[in-house]
Length: 204
Image 1: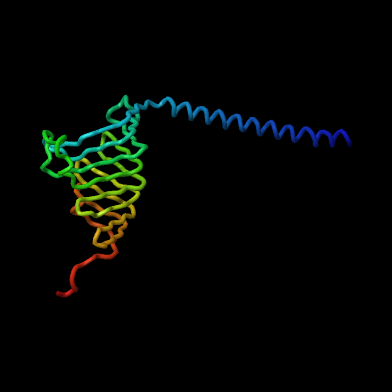
Image 2: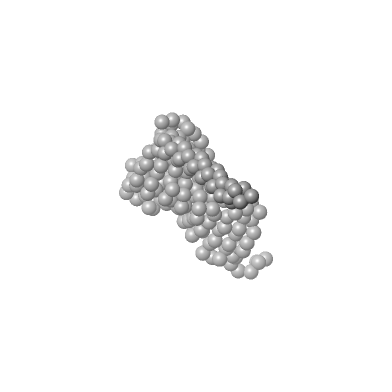
């Protein structure tokens, strides 16, 4: 009887620990395999990126980011660019051409967009901005959201998540989504609500 108690009191805990260690080792090996696969993915990194978007000799936008990661650079059709340290995009009016872009570009700014993160692909020419997205236009309006898309082909900017807009005159609007042109002068909110500042009395 004493021998049987020793067997159940010593051997079973030891067997349990062996199984547990084996399971941990298998999990560790799986983690190593996943890490090795991630490390083997081709990535190009570039510091201090400065990109000009133009159309028919007209400068449309200027994008800057401190760090750009190019994922899958071996396939230009499937590769995409990631900007994990944030991005800034400046939009210009139609009067700014490539010849004078470096001299008086600031005079032609119509809106600016900043975010903490951005990603874009080579195929759809769509830039997605995420986290603390802030837009400012020349009218002083400020748009804020957590996700914003810029379709460079259609010259369309839109968001499918909650967004807010405030103006210096006290106007404040909220919406579940919105669309806008590049200058943020022609925009529309979906299910918008808020306060619109007016001058004078209503009905006059």
